[in-house]
Image (cartoon, rainbow, N blue to C red; front, side):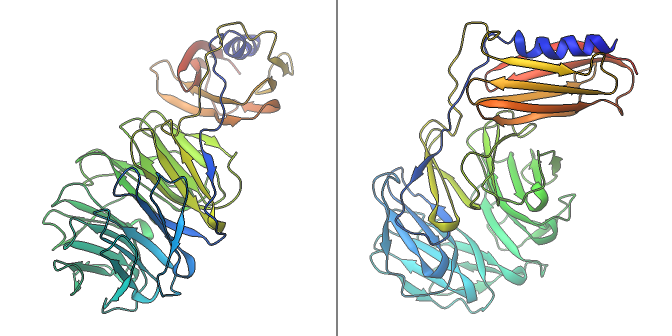
Length: 408
């Protein structure tokens, strides 16, 4: 029986004649700064802003290809920004700082926030109405363009990290300790919702009135399909902090981590593929201006742009890969462990899952981008009961399944 497992694992790779190879879709952008970048906002496909450490504000007018620094007149780190139009926007940050521009960032003026709590995130419905969230459960709302900011009761003292409105009346806030708040009256009142976790949540994104994701500490990702009323936890490849998450549709999403690692999902977040090719700088913000064009920004002025929807480019290879991929498996016969050495002629997305006879995932054996070269894989089945299972091998646009039998 052990030899069956060995043969099937070999077959999964050798018989995948349409496995695609890939290259990274995120291209570095020269921002001209080494100052950390914390928040992106694009009111149009060509015009956008990024804010960061020490009062940094930068603007692009050519779709993010070049960036120019604007004068903020402050040294406070700016953690969030939001532009409802191409001329009017806000930046928020340390010590309760709120900055506003009405002329596309040519001039920025400070507004009286009424708080010294640091502010993390903003959402504006128009040039006059918006909400800001921050430290100690702070929620501020304006209906007159920021001339006056009113404190809204949050019913929490937890740090609030991000706000996102699903509709003009329905919004979600995520924060410290897994805190989730929801409003259904445009932000006048907020109710605490059960996230099911206690890990800090730093980022949030909705694609429609029902479907949204939140991410944060220890590699945590949770999902809702009922507008934030209930949430379910998603398994991720590692426990590194996730600083930002964004989905372009119900299936395709990206989550960026504090070690520069990028997680990619093409099934709504059920499975994540890990890409470590961008480096080690923390990524704090993600923003897509369309299904195809998106940006990542983070520490040391690092920024990346994609024009293919953030996907790793897949080029179908119709020939058999027997002559290109070398594989060795040991020991033979396999006892409880399978050691597999694979040589890849090119960088490839690889995902291998073990499922039961009903298609329920038992274990994720592999889920990451593998570079060109030799890779040593160790599969352990000691805790898997005897029975019939399926070993599923998957790339971004190809999937195959083979039945296996485990008999200890």
